[in-house]
Structures are given as C-alpha cells and as structure tokens.
Length: 386
Image 1 (cartoon, rainbow, N blue to C red):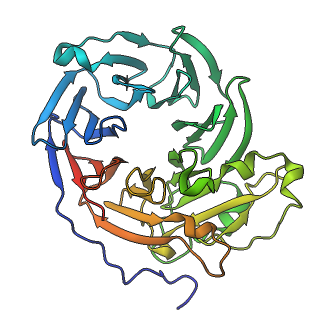
Image 2: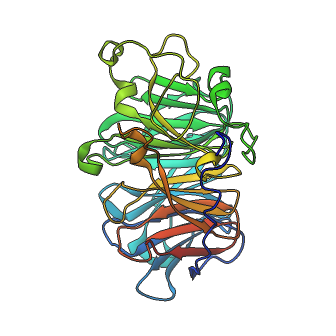
C-alpha cells in the first residue's frame, strides 16, 4: 500500500438507524449539550430560536423555550447548576432557569460582543467566554455580571470556537477561520502559545495531497478539551476540527511547559500522520510539541470537520468523536497515536453515514443513547455506541 493510499479505504461507513428527537419547529439544529448531572437529559438549540430539552427515557420533548427571535448559535450549562443554561443569539448571551418552564424569560443578558457570537463556554470559576465574528473573545464575570477581559489580536478573522481548560482555571483556548489555534492566560489577556495551521511549514508537511483529501483551508471550526484525569491521568489534551478534513490532537501540558523542560527542539519532522509526531507551528521562536494528526489516509473525513468531542461514555475520554460536512460521524481510539509502540496509530472504530452535514455533536455518560448529533435538519439524532 502506498503512503497516500487510504489505510481504511476498505472500512465502509456504517448505516445505523438513529433515534429521532423532535421539538424544533423549523430550520437546522445548531447545538446540543448532554447533562452530566442528569444522565439521559439533552438540551438543544436551533435556527428557530428555541431551546429544547429531551429526556431519553421518554419519547417526546419535555420542555421548549422560545428563547430568541433569531437563530441560537451555541448553548452551555452553568458549571455546577444545570438548571441554568446560557444561549448565544446574534451578539447577545441570554441566561435561562429551566425550572421556570416554557414561559421562562432571560434572567441575565450580556451584550459585550460587537459581532455575531459563534460559540460560548463557561468555566468552573463562573467565567463565560464568547467568540465572535470580529475575531475577539469576550470573557464575562457572571458572578459580578460584568465584562472581565477582551481577548484580541491573536485572530485576524472570525473566531469560531472557544473552550476553557479545566485543569488550568485561568486558561482558555480559541480557534478561528484564520487557521490559528491560540491558548490564552485570560487573566492577563495574553497568548501563551499558538499554532498556525496555514503556515508553509505545516502545509508543506501535511498529507493534504493524498487522493480524496479535502483541499479547503485548515480553518479551526471546533475545539474540544479533555477533562482532567482521563485515561489514568496520562493525557491532558485538546482536539481541533479542521476545515481541510483533518483532526489534530495536541498535548497541551507539553506545549504549556517551560521551553527548557522540553529538551532540544526536534526539527525536521517530514510528514503529518496519525502517528505520534513532533510538529512545529511555523513559528521560529517556539519549541515543537507532541501532536497527532488524523486525516483521510487513516479513514478520516473528506470534507471540513465541523465538530469534535471527547467521549463521556465508557472510560471517559478514551474515544474522540468527529463530525463533518461529508455527512459522517467517526469514532476514534485516539490515544494509540501517543503510544511509544512502533507503528502505533489512532484507530478508526466506527464510521456512521448520517446522511446530512453535521453541525454539532456531543456525547452522554450513559451505556446507550450516548451519541447525539445535530445536522442540517430540525431533528436531533441519537445513536448508540457500541
């Protein structure tokens, strides 16, 4: 088999019949989040401006809130209180208490972003991050209900995604349509490190010339951060969903460690694959870090990857789920790519044909009904793994 021949070409996509959750009235479902405190409860948002709650033990939607008169782009639960949910619509963030029922009105409203918000995330310390079309990220202190910090100048285009790093409470990670991923100390408003996937060094080392690989720019559409202590505490990583069809997994602690503790910079990595690699970020003043790269040659996506998530089911964080514009959802045993064993690679365990482009996905901490997918329809799809 040649280096450019897809290693998993023989692995045909699986057609699994999903469970369908109906609650949204029209348009696409844009986002979903699964409850960790109440396994089986899922919230979703849509272009219809509605928030829907589903209990997977029942057939019907259990609650619908008409939250906004415009599409809702992103939702997240308040840390430690999942009765409280934040939703972004346009350049606003709205907060609702679901215990108030379908007639619930926003209890809090934040209007600090100047452009349309693409994603919001909340930290255990009560900070709320909002990434918008201007490339800025606004950090809101929800305890004092005020703007805490504005993060800017790392992204030169739309900032599409943002997540807090659980084990570093003052650190946030962002990705954008400038093909950059940045990690920030948001208390100081400065970047700690960044990766430019559009740099010549990374582009020349990629396998995007492989037959069937997507030729779109390596925009960062979505970022997922692992929880602390996954897989016996061996890994503290993030995953990036890229516009060129690839998924990268990055050892955050290695990247954030002082340069002197990393040893000599190891230059000259010639190829990007899902094997353990030492790849630079195109910046001459930064050390190269531990990253794995999953692309079409390993059975990956043939169009932009829109979302990634670490598994909440089974052994938490063991699997990585990716969804893309190629209407597929793929489940990976990603940690094998960090293994020191020769020829050890991330393994594609499941490839589901979901028929439509994937907008968002999440996983639930349950033995069944544990993979939730939002596509370009108004129906939320639920799959079982295994």
